Amino acid sequence: MMATRRVSGLGAQVTSLPAPKWRVTLVVDPTMCDGHGVCAELLPERVKMDQWGFPIISDEEIPTALADHARRAVASCPRLALHLVEGLQ
Ligand code: SF4
Image (tube, rainbow, N blue to C red; front, side, top):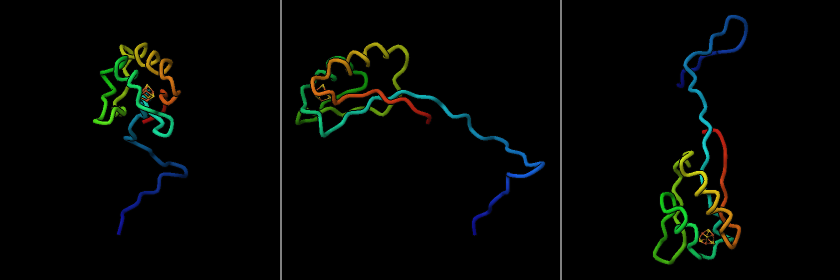
């Protein structure tokens, strides 16, 4: 049986919740991508090519130092298949 703890109501205490972290990642729409490889040339830190020439996108966060390169890769994708996604982790 799973143990539960009630945290609502007067006097409730919520402790040790992890702070959400805002992160930016790169994603590819595989239905749009046709494997030009521009993204891998412009952002090799996050994009590798598979044996068929399609991108393998790292799910690592895009740090500030790579933000301009990532935006350039997104803007240069001829199929508009590459996107930057922001969200809470
Ligand atoms: S540049 Fe765009 S179309 Fe070309 S491999 Fe990357 S995501 Fe696919």
